[in-house]
Amino acid sequence: MKETIIYDEGYQWIMFGRDPEKPEGIIDTNQFMIKDGSRSVLLDPGGVEIFSSMLACVTRHADPSEITDIFASHQDPDIISSLGLWDKATPHAKLHAPWLWEGFIRHFGCNNIQYCGIADEGGEIELSHARLQFIPAHYLHSSGNFNIYDPKAKILMSGDIGAALEPEGAPMFVEDFDEHVQKMTLFHQRWMPSNRAKNDWVRRVRKLDIDIMAPQHGRLFKGDDVKRFLDWFEALEVGTGLKDSARSYA
Amino acid sequence: MVHVCQKSMKPYPQEQAFFVSSSVVAGRLLTVMQIAKEISLAAKNAKAIAERAGEKANSFKPITDFIDEMGRETIKLVEEINDQALSVSRSAVEELRCSDACDRFAQAAELLGDHKRANSLHEQVEHIKQDAQSQQKEVRKQANVLLDLLDRIWSCMRASGVISTRSRVEAVSADEYQDSLNVVAETIEKASERIKAIIRDCERTIHLSLK
Image (cartoon, rainbow over all chains, first blue to last red; front, side, top):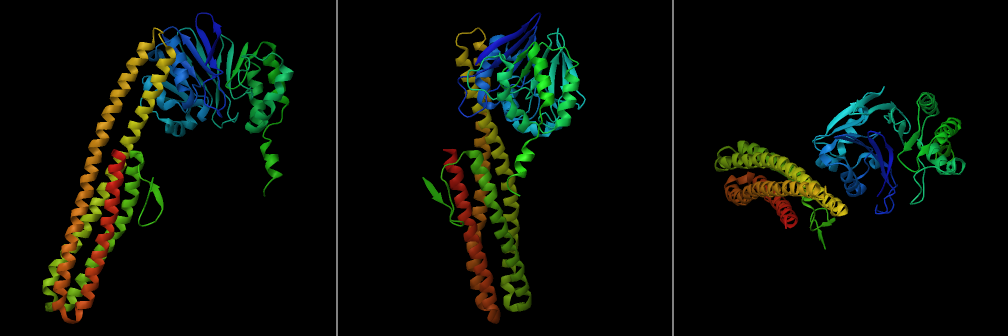
């Protein structure tokens, strides 16, 4: 699994992904770790199948006992199905995840880790230097869904927003936005259900100062590409599965 | 290799993971519960016949009490086994989770190679291994309790064989009630044979998955 340090000023944001060892047929995912002194946070730590690679990568940066917090943007298996294993690796950690999904996420196994439900309006956690904000992103795509914003590092971890379906070994950052659009269109049109939720999110996120937007699949957006993404997403019609199904069986 | 279940004739794997087989046992015991209820009903029927027969069936009356008691005892045991089977299945799932975690932690430690923190993972592997071992012991212990309970039902059913023979003997002196009492004896005999077949299958399933 490749790792890239995307921020390193007093504390670090580390991205893990592009795992060549992952079993065939499962979608590639980006995992993130924020290492801030003796505390480390894992953001969307991924599924069971990539757990070993992830644990090895994480351990290079911190002892598992130093993972004090885990964040799950929503309930999907590629986000958090490894929870039962992290529950053994980091039994004293807290899991920050939408309150809405508690009864569902616990199905992955959560006997030791403390589940801290995030309220619909969001919240924040404070580390040694970093203060992380939970930004509501409900219905994008999950009905209980959050992004993480770090105002100091100016990074928005945007979950499935900005995700792209890429061939293996794709570069870490978007290089040509116009060319990248074709890899994102279907994903957003089909997985995102609500134009209203999308536009509300765009309106709120435009107010944030963002250098890097980091989705959970595909490449990261940097600098002007963040604004390009917001413009593109605002203009995109989503929830197209409904139209498609109208053409099929009654 | 597959083994064919006698009743449903559906093939099921001869060797299953223990957490599966113990749940399968719990499911199959629901049938035993139904049959035990049939035994209780037969006991009530026998009691009614004995009442009607009066003195002619005097020696039959204590047998009906015994049949009734046997039916109730079987139902109680099935409830107990059901709880035990589900409890052992949960322990077996936990054991499986520990073993899976152990493998995945060991893979991670291997990926770390001679990194300074690899030892920390090796320690965790050892810790989880111990958890897995104690879970395994717990599963074995609970499985033995389960087998003991199944054995108790088996003993109950063996006693029912004696009862049905005794019922037939007593029925001979009950004149016009002989046929009715023979039907009761036959019902009990068949019910206990069905229960014995299921218990035998359950025991075999457990033994195989414990191997």
